[in-house]
Length: 156
Image (tube, rainbow, N blue to C red):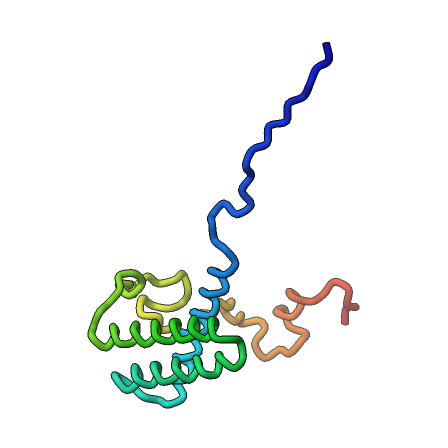
């Protein structure tokens, strides 16, 4: 009797996380919309609620520009990103804080350098040997020079 091999066909998943390419593309356009609207609104130099309004206006302008360049569906994603950025700026104006790195408090840990705990640099201390009495004023033929003279030089 011949031995038959049985090949089991398992359902292999090529996308185990379920993230499609369109989701990645939408997130990319949302990020471009958020960063672009904040960047464009930054040129106006407003602060406070005027900056929030400038960000909304920049998001709408980015949507109209995106509609002519990339298409209607992508321009909606650009608008969503811009509106998200304006929502974040409005939340900041209302005093809403998000826990995270905003709670970071700088410490006074000093790195092992020549500075004090507040980061002020001190003058470097150079450890040089004390000048000897023999080498003072005798020129190059004194005892101080012969101590550091190269052995490949000829003697005088």
